[in-house]
Length: 377
Ligand SMILES: *Cc1c(COP(=O)(O)O)cnc(C)c1O
Image (tube, rainbow, N blue to C red; front, side, top):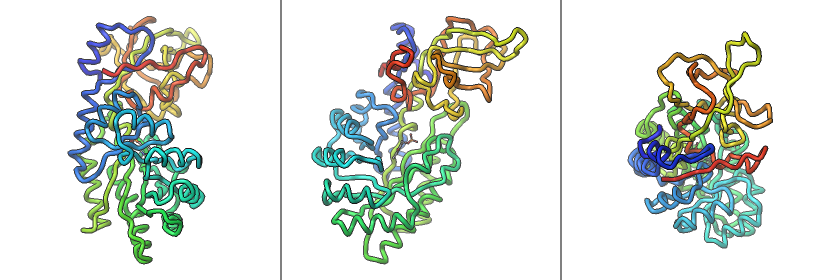
């Protein structure tokens, strides 16, 4: 939602060109809601969702830990004030020299999903804690992350056993139920798999300590989503169901749920046209599209709320597209987007729920369009 602070900023500063404005008060509220919903879990903010230094500094000061995917992200978290023991290198795909560099910086917690990655870590980050990611089906998520990362639970057992054999600390299991996950039972299925890995290794005397329950916590776009509290309750009862009284340490890694609703993109209508005089679907071209930061409209996966000054008046379906000379730069066409008939060229629109996965996805200068500017207030 566009908060009053964001609206005031846009009204007084009148920034030109498309830009993202993030309200830190909303990020602060989100962090507190996660802490309250899952009081026994440590929060590792997924830096990739929005690495603006102001956001990282706020979260570091509030005691957050950080999930990073590269040496650059490790350094961003450290520059924001996070000590190395509050940073996890959570990417399962790392160059050995980057693992070595992270180890030099003090990082001791690494994700793996195969023995090949374990061997890299054993070579250059001896004694570190590793957790193995297991696959999930991504069912119920609007932006699934399943196939690329993780292995089946039976292989996770081998991976962690191998880690232990190489002198690493076989620390736990991780999963990600898919981003924008609105099915509260998704964690139950993944925790059942995690428990299998714990139990199998326990029989061999390898005692895992931690379950990293990933991200997936949603932001409200066009449809209501359950509150953090509902996720907390569902996850806690799933933990109890599978682990009984022997609850492991737990981590959550919210990205979208931490910053998505804190940001609004201001954009301008560049052109409204038709392809034939008798078409009833208009094409609305904005000054931002897939290459300017709205990459998550790919396959029309994420449908952002769009606010115009004409809301409440009669609408008609539109194809919504970006400004670049690439025909892939069309955001909503299969399911046209209803916009007011009175919308005109030059109008400003606000695209809500854009605090996560926008600035980092914007191209540097495709067609000469500059990367998405961002103001954190
Ligand atoms: C991207 C990512 C996250 C954040 O996911 P959200 O759905 O945005 O909360 C968390 N953990 C890992 C390992 C990730 O890759």
